[in-house]
Image (cartoon, rainbow, N blue to C red; front, side):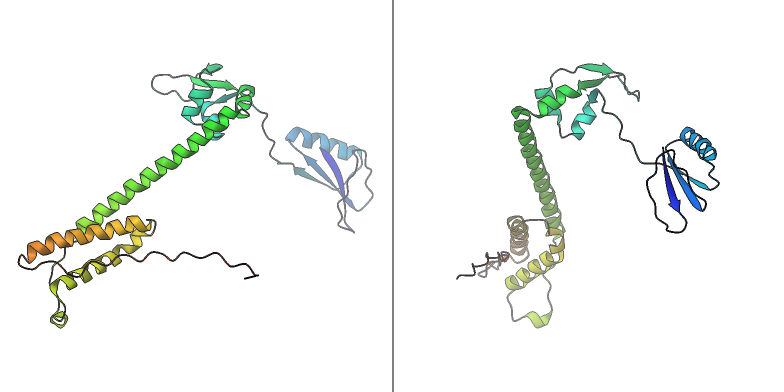
Length: 247
């Protein structure tokens, strides 16, 4: 609880001790944390002869004191994984019942904070953390690969060429027109492939051309697909590093 005078003439807030005696025309600002402190401040202000004062509750959040034990959930928030806990903290230090009763009534494992902090400073923790990071990256790569495969399958399944073209295109062969249809279909799906790399997008286009070759041979049995080969995707241009000023 603090007492601070506020001058009505200068509008300047200055620090003052608890025994500050305000002059006439000044407003006493009292900052307290709870109702009990506000009541005490009110009594002190009246005893000081203050006629005008302002009560303000200090709502600054107070950090809770560190707990003695850490739960498994708290460890994971600190960067631990289940594998790291099993390897570096194989035995828990205490246990308690869960606040929410779940089926099986499993106890919540508790680990001493001092023990956890000591392990986090060891080299074994850094090694396990690096392994966990690499494993997480591999899982992310596998998930993206599976997603790309699902998108490739969906794209190829949707490709159903009709092999019917306007008469004004008769100057081209049927095979050339089918290649144009494949490229046009791929361009319509191109926005869905923005997160895929060049090789993955090329696999999608190759799969479309392979399906087109099979369907074209079935639709035109006497026509040999070709000789024009399907076009490849253009590789993204790589930015060359800037040359030094001396060159």
